[in-house]
Image (cartoon, rainbow, N blue to C red; front, top):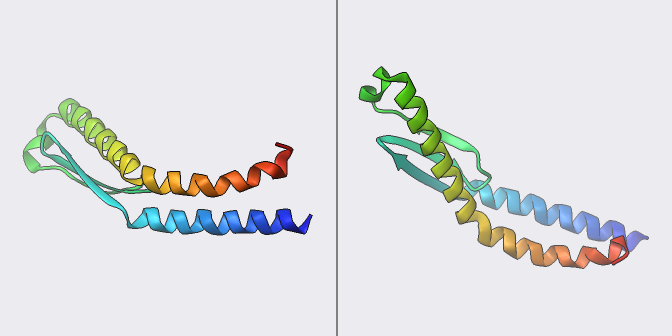
Length: 99
């Protein structure tokens, strides 16, 4: 019983460490002049829009959508190795649930 609790606490510790590590990963993507900064936790840190793009609302919205999606995809790709390494630690929990 107490072994299971210690395993859960260890996994929480690893998850917290991973989250902190992902915060340190930063990617920047550019699309049609719009730049988006994002971290490994897929949090948008900044969006930079050139003044000349402010005139066409529809085009700006389309470009923002594409730029944000590119940044989020890059953040996911940058953090995938860290998530894979953590998944190895999750295998130890499979016995807790009857497997």
